[in-house]
Length: 232
Image 1 (cartoon, helix red, strand yellow):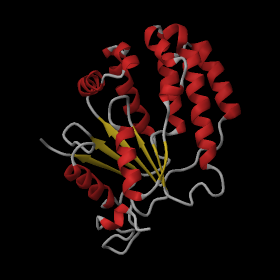
Image 2 (tube, one colour):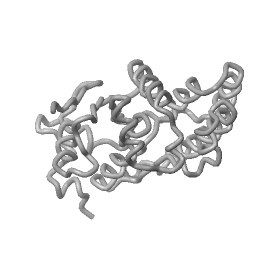
Image 3 (tube, helix red, strand yellow):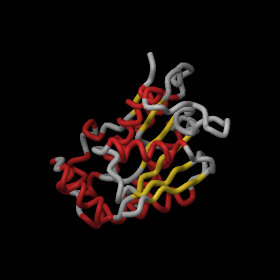
Image 4 (cartoon, one colour):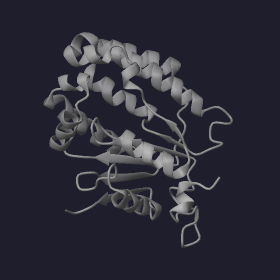
């Protein structure tokens, strides 16, 4: 069956003769803080590439809504629940036939520590680290990571606008620090090629033109780290 990417005119070959960044990839990860649109972009890329989707399921974390009400009390339980979920999904990707089709995911297992450092006390973080070290499988190296950025003000506005009930309890200060923590994480991340996308002025969720613009920019990527910042 012909993929949507081929129907749209995207191929797995670059005009220069090299392998295309997007359609030639077997594992793509879309990352970024709450409200940036990573799951929405992952779904669109999955449909374009006829890829298997591996997505986080925050609604399956029984502690998350209580965490947003009382972060200090429920931070460890929430973090460990997410860790176990991400480990289970990461193990799926380590199976021999896991990449028979392209895979698009909306999380890196390594980024789990971003939330742990932000929410856990020193003693809790030490316990979390021991559990993570014992249970986490060797990280699979993606062919491409797409890191979505947006200002804290934009993230706050998007979270409020989408109106998810438990997210109503997220305070602005938490989203601000979370966005900064992601920036620090990806400043040092070099395990895979990274396309850093400023999502402030591009609507890849609702606009087909904007989505195709982003896809073509990713297709043109040749460096280990590149940036896409669409002006107003």
